[in-house]
Length: 504
Image (cartoon, rainbow, N blue to C red; front, side, top):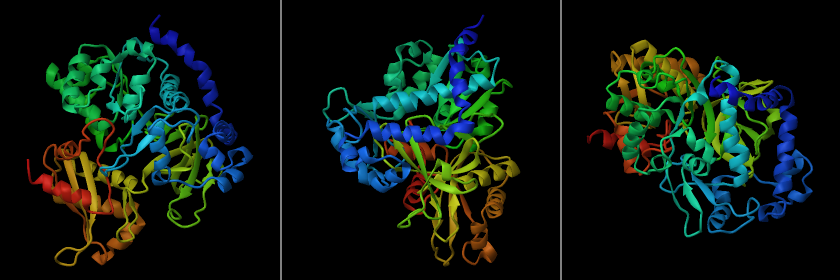
């Protein structure tokens, strides 16, 4: 009998619990809200906002304001200096350095012990639970797990307190038994220099029986490429013949899908999307045939949603999970057992089903282009790029786009910098196909492109090799969970990249 068939039994009870998502999601969420406010009612934040008087969602809405990081930053900084029971009971010793900002100032998201257990590790276990349910012949536990992580560093001078990538926090706190099946070594996984780490990971893992890999697609691709360089093999399944699944998250998988199919040619290979962020673990792709993810409703996370057409207004209509509708683009608001209260995470989602609650990530509240009323979101960009790639034989490695507000000829357009892993048959053809597809899937973009009156044809600038990596490295953000902003309403990032593109 193989090891997986024995371990599988430990996941059967959770599989039963997850079936409740289809019929009891609202009740499960009400239970989460009651747990959060009753647990935190004696914290400083809980007393200030009268958590002890909260008996319903309506009370919660009335007592607690919606927050961005700016509103909570002072409290979080006090917590980082060792103060206890500010936003969550006790002293919080771990802080995830958020990859959701491109500014020099980072966000530091508190990660409590309760949050580690109830949110982050629970998400990892449920990913395996769903995977085992969908793959009865899996041998995932008969080999090693390659898990990519970032790095961490001391937090001020507070004893045993650290800040860093969430992945590093998870690796640092993981059950010691898990280290028996995880690669690379902990010391290697937590290295801060990604280029050194990439090489060491490849060397430490290339002779192991790796059955599953987890991480951000862009960084994992870099590691896998190094494995092939060192082994002289053409495909990863020649190195790891028992590799069967990639648990991926952090960035959209669409631009990388074709490259992974070329690197890993085994018909047994599976891909599972996870929605895990510094702020929490929110979604899992429970059906391989459906790209939408299940909203994880029984974690230490209470969800609310703001329709994007009301986002930024003085009194937006905020709804709990029971109030969402399919097909509407929402900004997600969370309250968690890490001490985030009605926190705007910055991601936007769209529900494809409400029974059970399933959704797709559509972009960021700040990662969009709406310079001319075109409302271009990341979901549009991913679909447009996928189409253009199919039409031209291209493969996109990295990209970013921003508006050109007015050039020397008083023309306005979108400018894209794209690093191709496989060049298109013609850059002009690629740009044409991308532009046409964006008009097809976004009526606002189509209206602004009408007869080139408001917006002219988009421009594609071909990036030199490693442009985006070089730019991230210059910011000290190479590796870990850092990623290139896909769309921006300003030209700050794209101007930096254009300068980098001229200098190899």
